[in-house]
Every structure is written in C-alpha cells, then in structure tokens.
Length: 445
Image (tube, rainbow, N blue to C red; front, top):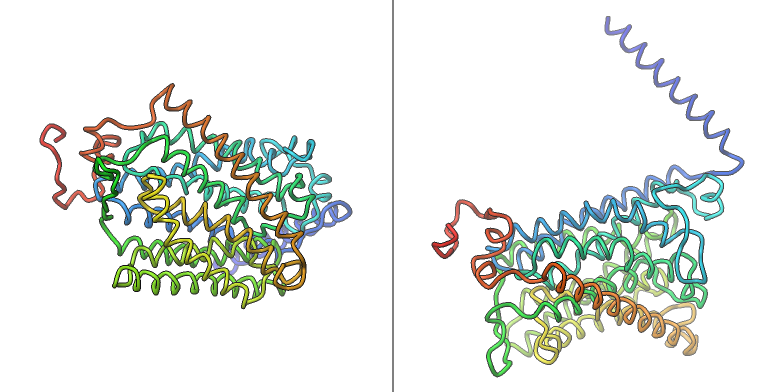
C-alpha cells in the first residue's frame, strides 16, 4: 500500500514538473525569469514584512501600556489595508506606463501582461516584485503611527493609511523608481531613504502638528515634559527585529541574487552600528549617562540614512553616514520636541524624515561613482538635494490637505476622557495587559 501511494505521489510530481517545463518553454520567447533571483526577492520581502512586528514593538514599547492594543491594531491594519490598496491602484500609479514623468497609468488590479512585464526588464515574476513593493508601501504608512500615537482616532488613522498607500507614496515611488522625472535626472535612492522613510517621516510631521501634543506634554511656558514609554525591553526587541529585517530591505532591493549583496549588507550593518555608537557617546556626554531609547533610535537612524546609498558607497562611507545620522538623531529629536513643539512619542519624524533626507543627500558626498568626496563634483549632490526637497514638498502638501480634511469631516483626535483612560479601552474596549492593574477611571470600567 505504501509503495502504491509513493508511486502515485511520484507520478503527480513528474506530471507537475513536465507541465511547468512545458509552460516555461511556451513563455520563453517573451518572458524569462531566474528561480534563484525570485526566491531571494521573496525571502527579502518576507523579512521586510516581519519588520512590521519590529515597528509595532518599538511603538508599543516607547508609549504607555494603556495604548498598546491600539498600536498593534494600527500596525496590523497598515499591512492589511495597504496590501489591498497598493495591489488595486498604488502599484499601477508607481510602476505603470509613465505619464509626463509624474505618474503611472496602467497595471491596476494586478493586470500585468506577460509582454509588458518582459519589457520591464527584471528577472523575477511581477507577482514577486509586487509583493516586495507592497511591504515597502506598508512600511511608509506605519511610520506615521508612532508620531501620532496615544491620541488619534482609530477610524481617522484608517483613512490616512489607505490614502498614503494608494496615492501619496506610489506617486513618489514613480518619480524615483518607476521611470519618473527624478529617475531621469539620475537621482539615487537605492532602497528608499526618501521614497519610503522620508515620505513616512514628513507625513508624520504634518499629522502630529495638526493633531497637537498629548495631554501633559508641554507646560504653559512651552517647556516639554518627558512621558516615558512602558517597556524599553519591547522597544529594544523591535529595534533588533528591524535591524534584522533591514538585511531584506536593502539587499533585497538589488532584485537579484548576485555579487552586490555582500557589499549592500555590510554597508547596511556598519551604518547601523555607527549610528548607535555615536548616539551612545553623545548622550553620555550631554546627559551624563548613555540614553537607552535614544541609542536605539540611533541604530534606526543609521539604517534609514544608509538605505539610499547602500549600493553606491563603500564601507568607509557607510560608517560616516551612520555617524552623521547619529548626530542628527540626538539634535533632531531635541529640535522637533523643543523648537517645533511637535509631540512625537517615538522620534519617527527625526529617524525617518530627517535621517532619510540626510542619508539621501549624503549619497552626493560619499557615492564612489559621482560623490563629491570621491572626485565627482557637485552635480549628483545637487540632484539629491533637489529630490529631497521635491518629495518633502509633495508629501507635506498632500498630507496637510489629507489630515485637515479628516479633521474637518470625521475628526482626528479622541476625546480628553478617552486619551486619559487610554485608547485600548476608549477605542477598542480591551486592554493589552489584562492580568496587570492599569490605572483606569472608574467611569470607564
């Protein structure tokens, strides 16, 4: 009996194998792809998907326990809503047939023909490429969650997440990765310091500004008060997950399993390490003790900073980019908090917006081919700066209209009572830590 079952299984496998070969031979004239490249890009995409868990842990750990369920729900919906929105419209706007260098105009709802995909010129099926790009779109969306944490209406956040995934992010992506006008100028953003991280960071800045600070964040004289998160342990776990996932984020953007992966992985790791070490020493000097949460953000700042140039710079350049990002993390957080008076509980504006911009501009300094410090002159530096400004203007302009519209139509902020009791109960009717006593006004029990 066992032999008959084994024979049946082998027969099915052989049939499937021959059917696959026959299909491949029929498509060979118009569409060839590499199995190795496909597997690598899919694995890299899975790593980037896992970064959502990292973002969730960082945001939950750096905020108060009474809002942890809300944080988890927002991160989950960024992936779920973003996946559908990007598949339906976003992917087409980003990679479809170019219109005036501004926007794509085809490939909506996954309607990509074999012949048109063959002309795109990469060695993986469009479904694998679409998955990889989908998780990037989800990353851009989820950055805003942390900056607007602890006081945003969940329904309003859902609307924002949908719009950034379907319009705001894909149009920037088309400009740079989809054959748009910045791509034509030679703008370099290999894996998304600007396309992904700055888009999320600038949207976070606008959203948090319109939303306003948390209750108790600022005194009447404008002096900020620290509102500690409930778990540095969770925050650290999130950073380690993100650091790990970045080895899919950056090397995966090569879209091929080739010899460039080693350099990309090394520059990514070195910049992260340099960012963390730099922030540790700066806070040690400024605050007399090395600050844990700031150092964790220093690692993330280094990762965001190197993402644009991870394939264009050498390892020495990567270390310098990480160091520069580290400085901007410390002083950027202080600037946003004390000068702009924007309440950003997790430092998302600085880590993603500012470090994304600085990292992108740094390509014009440290790129082996065309960088100012490598004898390439200022042309690339100027193009990088232009791209950063253009993306910031588009993102902040559209985000301003979006958040103002949401505020006027459905409201953006929860009530004072809901904010004080926590969004877990106020918005979801549950608690993240059911076995722990969390201070809750009796009227909400």
